[in-house]
Length: 127
Image (cartoon, rainbow, N blue to C red; front, side, top):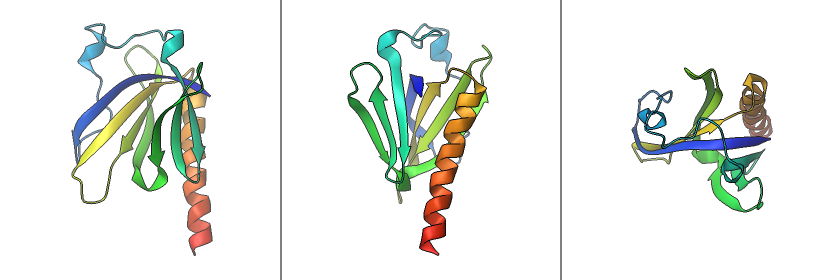
């Protein structure tokens, strides 16, 4: 699955709402339509979430599964389907938030469901 990495917010305090629409979009800091070099691939496994450049196949980010605090999808005011991935660490009151634009709502739902399935599978094996 290919996505566009829209924004990263390094200072999201604990308890804050993940669904923050960035004013950067209005300032043209976030592209409404992805360029080829903005496209990324998300790989979800029992090890975590890996973000790769869709063209060069380089790993851009790795997020171990135990750091994934929350993932949600939503439609923004431009009717684009987005994923917000909230990453945190134990004992750290600040979270990193990554926002990805999806091709459609089904793709966003599938990513959320895939991550849920991984967590459920691990939880079954721990019992």
